[in-house]
Length: 324
Image (cartoon, rainbow, N blue to C red; front, side, top):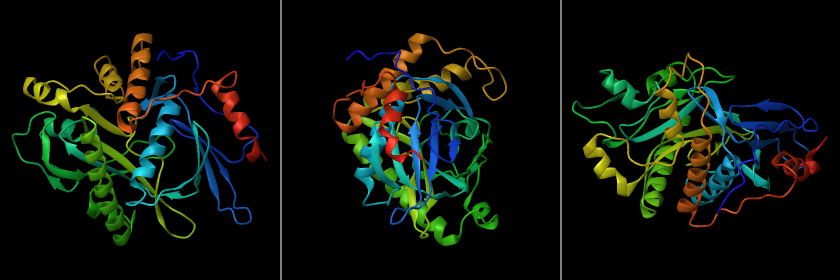
């Protein structure tokens, strides 16, 4: 399947929708409670790709792929964690129950991997052995499986700030979460990761690590929000490539955004320098990788929605019922 690389959604600014909030990847609008309808948030997945707390570029079809993949995973894990989803009015859009996002981002890791400053591999190679409340043994190699999956929480940075490493003691003493909240989301996160690893394994993949975001709704319930097990929030490796790559000390074949992260990190200090322009062949390959991820994980063909003169025009039409 050849995708039209000119159909890109770099942003979704819609003046007719109320209470905008623009994140790194999603453009959101809050709808107040109305009669029997709870307070809701419209989340529109753009094609922006972010890493190192920055926007790197836009990847055609990425937003649609991620929304549909998260939809699949939300359905597959609803028995483990209730989620925020109420409706899908467009392939790039989810309307969710409005939640107050808890100020702790939950990252679960099964391997010594990563390229960012908060990754366990980066810290391990700097000689750190005690991190996030865990002590890792000496002698681990790049991309080695950990003795067991661990939670490596970070502060949830809002408005473009930097995530900071945390451990359970810091979370509780700083009052970021209550003890029951921490216990509940820790248990849900590990169960979600176990389900994700099992399904990935059945499809010839390794779910290496992932992040989860939880929020509290108006009734005080903790709900899984944002996205789940997508290539933006997770690292996937092709299982068939792992053993040979591990022995060679190289990164296994993957289809997550780690490829672009590694490309940028090899050419600059991504936290301080200007980001070099991402070449078109890498953008096209990354788009194809997102589609491959969707089709491999869900077992269904990706069907691009090409209606409307542009993706934004289609989204505007589908969201007209929610215009003020």
